[in-house]
Image (cartoon, rainbow, N blue to C red; front, top):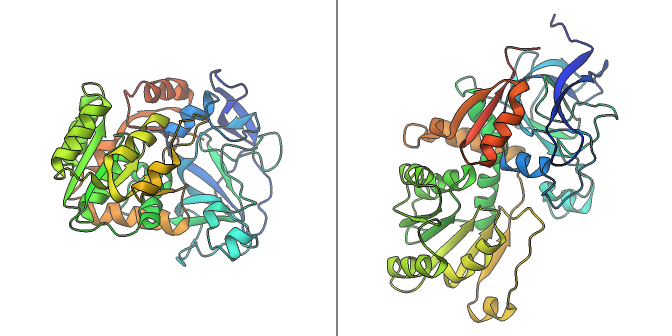
Length: 373
């Protein structure tokens, strides 16, 4: 029988822009039907964690919160009715899982539109106040409470926890976005804006999907070299080129037409308008990285005259978590997923890890919790 302590160590944000503090947060003594209590083994850091801690997200955060939302862990307590994951696989204590934000299954977006990632009653990890039960709704914590309405997916035995954690946010967002976009054709030129974790993963998916040419735009140079290893035919540095030069390079690579598909993963609002210029007439522009409050000026007639398709994609559901892990398993001999995982940090080093992520010194740092409790 696994011993479950009364409190869990957790990295808590009490004020935007201030360091996270390691605090003792209550562990629920009962697990309600449909819920799980998980002993976290690792939590990879996402750029969203950095933006949230700095107060730069365009959504409500009910401080104080436990930061972190890319996590895997082992089940230590199970509520009634939790013997299967969202894919139909059997679950039992000790299994490793990853889990999603909630969806109610009853609102218009869930039941009619069939877009559970847009659930009107969704609850997401690292946004809810720790002073209300069940307290443990963030990944930088020894224990996490998986809500009854959260999807959950068992992690394959042959997939390392840091890669599964990465699949639980960064990669599931890419997989979901690709589904929103639709098929990438064998004649398509794809431009990837951003060479952070999402952009690098998207580069790999575009390559494995059979795109004729993949062009990655980003920085620093080490990320561009990694983008080439993930399948980019051409890389353009935002540090050594300006927007006009990048447009000229894309036009030259496409016979003057522009890219068939442009995918934005930067979070920089200016990348949106630049992406519109890089797309050919009738092309598609996919936005994933725009989560902040930044604004741009745009002439709507540009979209009409150039017949552009512009769409946004948010997060992903249990199916995307499962598909992301399966993609890694299927293509890990062809794509260097392990090189996205950078240094390992203890929970009490979380502020150091966040600072390194913000400075782009890390790609996917790992908060390792499996050996502590």
